[in-house]
Image (tube, rainbow, N blue to C red; front, side):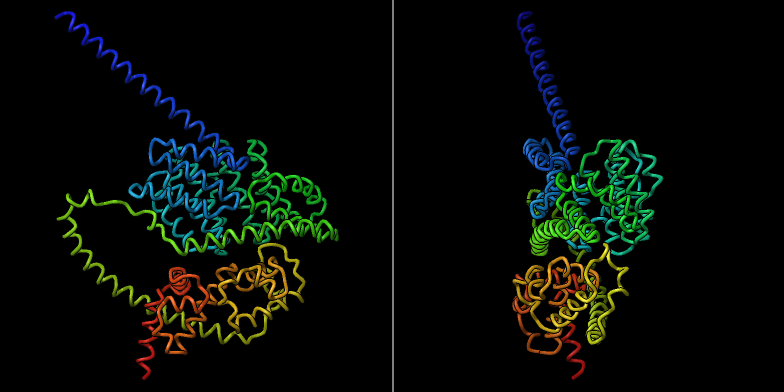
Length: 526
């Protein structure tokens, strides 16, 4: 009896020791993975390719959905730096899918922040704003609860400032970044602080407040140097400071900064940053009359710009063709048995709510329809007006302009002719093909569209296509009976889905409902 008891106690001790060792091993692995993640995050800008490899390892070996989401977020940031927008988008949507039932987690908030930045880079401003609004509701403007949340909050206000700049709300873009907060946490979060100061430098630069721009670029550069943040952070700050000094015409100062930018242009890994450096250097050498160096850097700029624009176009098409819900669907069958009664009661409430909502929505959409038709008529009436003088709109440009005024006028005249035709309905139309057709280059065309149409090239073409099909619907009643797929084909879209998404983005109303409003309008006049 004593022997059996002794054996039993020994076995218990062995089991406890095994459990302790397993727990120790798991804890050690988790600690190692956290160290690997932290190191990869810190080297994101310096070595994005290595960061991608590490993030894929962490994703495969993640112990939870949240850990896997963190790895996917890191992968997406590295892919965005290299201009691989579709790969980044897929990683972010997968991250959302993993945490579809826990949208308050820090990983999901980070995913939405990166998505917002990606949408902004692609020119899809409504979606970028939607993501930031979602984050703002969750964080409730509480930056000091713990270090991780403070770090995230600084990233959030920096992203919000960048979006406000895209919306030309420059005063708000400056106010949203709390300098007292940056000073308070300057030594804890150098990466975030450097980016925030650089964003302020950009904003002041856009509004040509060169002294302020130089001041904040200097602060960003100081943090980058003191904290050893790497060449990309140095390049962000150096570029803004050089642009500010160039704007102030402080020749001696920006001449001293050009050699550093020349070195950094070969070392940085952010393709958009590299493009912007070459653009500045091209403008600089043009002003110095050094034609060979101007041509070299302008060619580099154009090559990068074409590559980035092509990648953005493909990613934009993907976003228009898909919704996040396509990747968020889950198998909910295992939950239905326990919730049948709740579903029945809920269904009745939802029906009443939907009926009420549809009435309000229909009224709101009809008002939107009338407003859009009024705006369209006004735009058409103004088409015959004289092209605005280049100098009168110079303030709307984000960067120093080097397009000869005569050239700009010629391109504007060609744009009016282009708008009066229907070449924009060609599916094969791209920035490059249109620039060739107008006998100019992509940089000139892109700058003029941004400057005079207040939108990027993709948005400009999409709006022309939508307005074209609306005029067809209003002036040729036969079009009212055609299928949406035919209308999409007629106006130059590649699919029914992309047409419907763009149409609603431009007008605020789905195409079917818009057509019904036109029918109602026509019937009331007969």
